[in-house]
Length: 262
Length: 207
Image 1 (cartoon, each protein chain N blue to C red):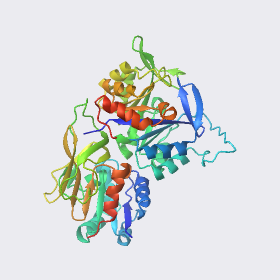
Image 2: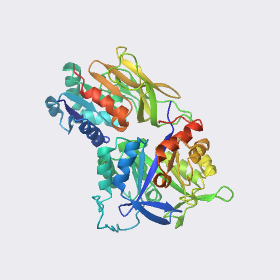
Image 3: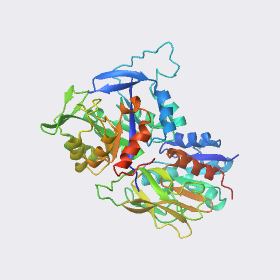
Image 4: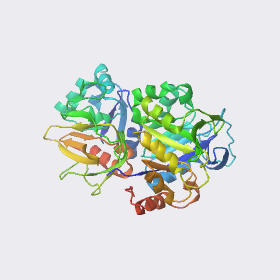
């Protein structure tokens, strides 16, 4: 039986691990390489890294910082792929086919694309042709709610597009995306639980797997994402502030009747 | 010590296979020249991508004949992973009909889907039941769990191959093994401890 995936998302900004709230507040929480080793020891299903740095890198290296390669965020990929024998997905700041190719060469199994798909949608099929559809995760940031409807947005909420997440997800599937990573700006970092209506709408509209994200506050939220139609569940903040987040998350999913890899 | 050649035919993430073998203490190298296979004791054909392009790359770089010599005639331990397994079939149907290496016969065909609970690509961790007498899956738990990422799977391999099935909507072929030829549809190099154990079985294989 296919096991339901539980995926930690690690957010990177200027080479540091951060936590995020509503896509606008980012608080530094630690050293990305150290965290990856911790997840490997936990035997997690998969890791997603999202580099959310905007514009030029502004590296604030602390004098007491022991980690290396902070000037080059992809050095994290090099280090992680040497010790983590699990699937790695890398997203953020990928603008060209060459950007994607470099990430694959340095150890990524999949890449995720978001903003660039509005400017260069042909990038999906170009990458899929060379690396396969399964290597392309299309990320959708949604804003709105069940009552007023949803729109796709990028750059936080700076740019709101005419597409609904359902229309955009169908487009991305047609273009050759292998998975959809679905985020909600309003739920991000709030701990209110997933936007299950959004998940329901999008996963019903496409045949490819949908990874639910944004809003997890308790381990019980995961199963609600799957019930709403997602194929896998992801979260970011909860991994950093609770002990045994993997084991306890999986146990809650199992209690809810899901097959998980314990 | 085994010297493992990882065949580089310009598709997929080879680094992770090399990293896993090095972690296990094997001497492993990514090999881009078919003639280099003479220097190695074990061969891995990895790969992620499409059947047609994979086969085209194997042929144009001269891999197909050399692999056949080392695997079928010299019988060196061989492991096909994911697309590398599918390319061992007689043919594949991805983006048109293409001939494969034909180490194990059969066809690599698109898996059935329903778009709801059974979605393609089949992505994620899935359990399988090791067949009795499996050397590939020796020493693994009763229900080992591996990471899969694929849309196509092998059908109708030659009858002498020992088959391990996994389940996605319906059973499909996840492993095939016979003598020195082992194939895995999943990624042992991405399957944490169960995958590392399989790779250890492979590097310890002697004929």
